[in-house]
Image 1 (cartoon, rainbow, N blue to C red):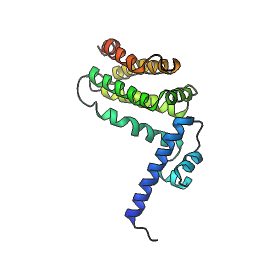
Image 2 (tube, rainbow, N blue to C red):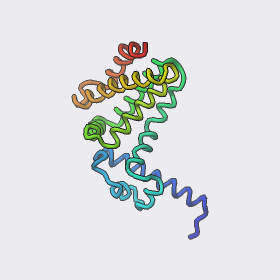
Image 3 (cartoon, helix red, strand yellow):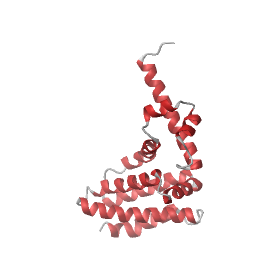
Image 4 (spheres, one colour):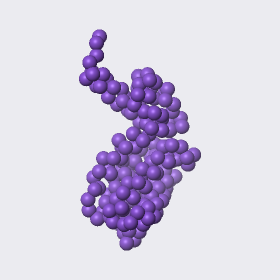
Length: 187
């Protein structure tokens, strides 16, 4: 069977989607460290060569996974005031994390404590998103400092949710932070 460029492009896009779907599924179950490229390609039904056509490494794949999950949230908060934009990003990010489930979040934090690529990349992504918003309102040094403080509170809320097996609500925690502390940090 002869393939034209359109067929090849569609097949390549389909393989990339399969790889991402498989990676989301098995990394949510086993965490970043518990999954190899071979595990991902086997679950996706593609070759390792197909993986490396799209991604340089498992860490590169993680960047794509974070972007796919959180870029749509980031893009919804490109206008408005600083508090409104940051609060919206944090609120919707927590909702996205909660929708993946408590056990997935606990595994993610377990991986993060061991300083795996996923944990570091997600923290950097979140700090960068908040800093980008704040650069519209503050100089770069102030935006950087405020983004770091906000990330510390945000991650503290998520860790508390995980450590209490969901007894402490991440949604309630972020709403309280957004109402009480965020305006003070951004004052």
